[in-house]
View 1 (cartoon, rainbow, N blue to C red):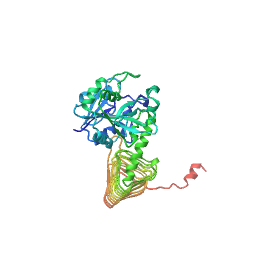
View 2: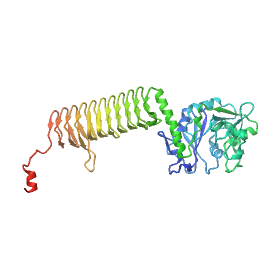
View 3: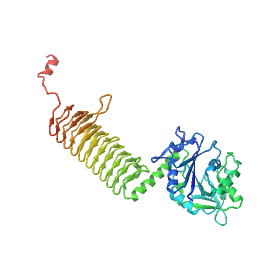
View 4: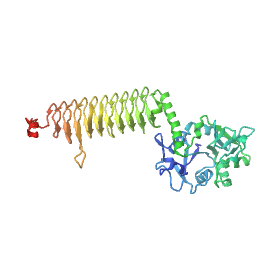
Length: 453
């Protein structure tokens, strides 16, 4: 039977000092709570139960596969698990983990399920500095004899404080053992709360063995209670993301200045230059160059494309297309193969054909531009009449003069030309030259007349 995973997410996170619930804070493109949820799903959880407080879940969309249990009052971790008791089967393996410990991964959960043989199995870690963590005291046979808390100085002896093996707060229980032990957990502690570590004490008290699984990666204990800890966890998560991409054949020139969200995909032989951010669900093909100083959010970048010093959101850049420097590609923009959006160019909700060029100092919005068209510097599509947006259609192989404005709705035929400085308000036939500007008139001796001399 696939395990049931219980994720504890009822804490208020007051130390974050934020109007945003702690578990809704973002970590490399996902809310904190989404990290253990993803680990549970990837590990093959049969059921996922998230324990929330009376105000409801901290994240609006947890997924259709998530069941909720409500802990009415913050009375400790054992009380939180007890809130989900009605959703736990006696014959199931129950994994319990905290929602604010995001670096737990699917492989650890799978190893925990495979190693689970006793009524309870505790995931442990070896730390060089174990201060603040509960210590694992092992029995003669190597199992867990007890977990010693260290919150108060008198909780542990000097020998116990010298132990480097700590409790991670991740457990596997036999459903029946857990459900039978929970009612026996009391509140005889300084906080007056019911702790899950006491379930281990109940099981050991009745003679049941408790095993330990030593995590290979001690970072699994890294929790988030404040923004300092969030920054530390983010640094570790980002390091792992970078490492995964580099091992898959991506060059990250300066990892310390590079941000890559967890859901970003990058193809082999792509190069991420310094001070670049790849965010959201961005997809990058093979052999692309990104940066320096590029921000790419929820975009698709084709093989061999180049993005330099630019900001891209919700757009698509085709194979071998080039963007920048200092370009802004807004949602709905599509650059087809070999197209160019050059220096100080803004494009919104437009299709730029294969090999077409918008080289510099232009705004193209709500437009369709044909293949191999070249728009001159300072091109503007006037797409808004004050009430409605209108579309501009520019055919293939069009030569746009500098400082041309296209007042939509307007269409320009294939192979047409526009004269520099034109304001195009009527359709241009294929192959025609549009001259839409006032005829120049020179006023002789104007300066002299103005001065009155």
